[in-house]
Image (cartoon, rainbow over all chains, first blue to last red; front, side):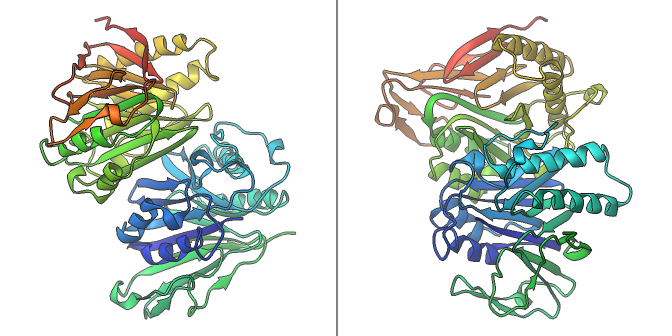
Length: 261
Length: 261
């Protein structure tokens, strides 16, 4: 299994604090030492950092902690390999271009019989179940929506339907984004919280570290963080239900749908 | 204009020395201070680092110099913006998946009337002429070769034809790779050299720095470096001709074709 971390915000925000907690689980407080990756959306742009080595020993991961990259959407993943060897090609997040946008996704879980799903435009590069089904999901979106739909909720509903299909194949916790929407789909385990004024202090679970968000934020800032397990010990994280999809936009929850089986 | 740097090698090789020279031109000895990027192919995997800030001041660029990432193919670019604002979305290299491979490219030059080229599967995310025509080129490959051709030289010949078409629109120096082949196409300015045993010492042009490759290489190593301008002052760089395409594989030149107009 692996751990996921996501962020959606209405202003460019750095994720140094949460990421510092997450990477402890990559060979430190957790066993997820088979690589890690993080994707940042900055304006229309996108960049990602990936490393097939344990995050806790990675100089690139240390740089991400120390160099505040301001972003509105972040997706990160630390890996404990099950399907697919430890390699850069098998390191999340996986990215493809659709509608002239960078779509990026990371998966936690393990799936059976996924090879029966027919692929199309997007093909996997590595050998994981995760990349395979993310390609399938993007192919579904591309086929059903050759251009972005006028009503975004038709996209959100369809994505929920396809995620439910994938959940029938095993464990499928997913973070997916095009830089505007952040889709969080829960199969077994995913938590989120939204920080907004009045901001307070937060304490990491995995590291002796706290931050007073009041000193780093403006009154209008809205920042949602999503993680497999709560990253802080003194905040009220919302636990998602199996089959639940929540879509965030600019830090706010804009859509929620629940499991059908 | 911008500067390009590429590498093709038969063993995983780091590019720290050449990259240290290149980034001096990004705000130091050269004016290319509008961002930089570098793509590494490692096995089937691919990763890239991009930054819309001057390379000479970038902590990420410093990390690349200090942290030897071993790779068989590298493409790098430092930018002096002409078409498209300074932003992450407009920072080379540009990447798309084709045939289950990461294809990556960087361009030096400026093109006119490129918007008349019809696009297909691949769409640009940013607003540069470079990304537009790279998408067009990958669409051409995809349409003509739905699967990788049995004879690679049919691909190389076609890529040369399409590059010649683009050269008619302006200045089009290109580095393109799928992790196996490195295509170097010259419109106005591109140089390359191949290092192999017996290895010697090399001196950077842009920085007081030399390296004795004999201490860092094996007898069988073959490493080709391609750059807009020679990076070292004491080696014999080959100057490419307008319209010339050279394809490298595992450090060796495997194809060469010359301009037709």
